[in-house]
Image 1 (cartoon, rainbow, N blue to C red):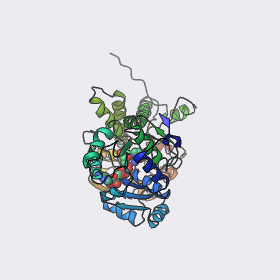
Image 2: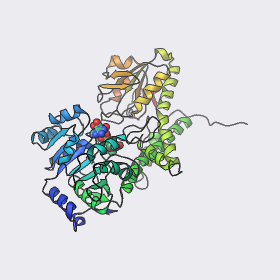
Image 3: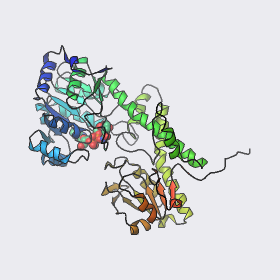
Image 4: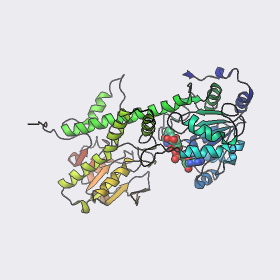
Length: 464
Ligand SMILES: NC(=O)c1ccc[n+]([C@@H]2O[C@H](COP(=O)([O-])OP(=O)(O)OC[C@H]3O[C@@H](n4cnc5c(N)ncnc54)[C@H](O)[C@@H]3O)[C@@H](O)[C@H]2O)c1
């Protein structure tokens, strides 16, 4: 691995030198395929740096919004989008014909999994095939979507070559995983280092040079597979560590008398050799619940079982079930029949202060509640006016004294800053706090069930 710096460009010649010069003169046209959380910031950043940036997406509504100067990604500045569209530097299209004008094509399409949790590369494959029809000699293609090692060379490259051009000879190809953290105000596209690995040294250098137009630090690796694997390591690292504290939370609850949140805060005071992760109602988003499975699927082709990864996923996927267990226990205590119980969930998005609803723990909790016969469920989430799951549409409920007091249980799933826990605890009958959000609430603590904490219990002694 090596940190990119402009001296890496010395000795470039032919098409690589031409592309470098077009980039330096800001004449290079940038196409971004897939205008989501990853693609849109890239398209906008290049436009802001003076490039002509063209977004391509299969969803006409997104394309129309951009062309009207309207932003739909919360981390991006509305005015920036408007200004770049007005200046003619940012536009969008549903047609891959735009690729014919592009010097650089980023691919940022989804990489979901099937119902059996096998990788679904169909979006990458179809985007690659569509690009190949218009790909020009001398162009550079950079795949951004998170995926398993080998995707760039074994799945994308053959699609791109369908038009007759050869990767490494007629066009450049690299993998450069995305690290954007929606909602993060400190680390943005520009100041988050990224890794880039091309199918050959020239592809690596030229892709790093292009990335460096909008990102300060680029680390070059020897192969796309290294970049593909390191991205999975990042996300699996999170999954495993979250699972570890979730397991500890379950143990603390079982033992009683130890509050897991105090434990993780205390461990977090160690300035080296420890990274703080917190328990919760389960993992969500497009990355942590999915990406580990990309690697475990691939590993099986090599007769290798990724035990850590599977175990971590197991623990994390069990958390929504555990939250529902806490709900059932509290309803039995009140007591109230399940069919009569009213439940309010605070938070539909998968993490605080964002509107991304994908694979949110709320989804699992709602499904399980309905399975248990609890159907009178509402959601309050100022970030999500509407949420569809389990064949139902939930509309945001305002938190008032009347609404809060009308539910048997309020489950705090997402720790949005907007939730005023003093108010919630004051007016709710009972709260299941899965994020320790009510930690500073003084009055009414007896109404709170905190995930990862309970009253001291007796040891289980096996007598025979
Ligand atoms: N969201 C994140 O925070 C994040 C972070 C790092 C990596 N990633 C990875 O980046 C990739 C994209 O994620 P995202 O969150 O931006 O997804 P997204 O769903 O927000 O955006 C993907 C976009 O691609 C479009 N699309 C689908 N198929 C297409 C096709 N054939 N041609 C053109 N457009 C197409 C969709 O309409 C959508 O607008 C995924 O692999 C994801 O794992 C996401």
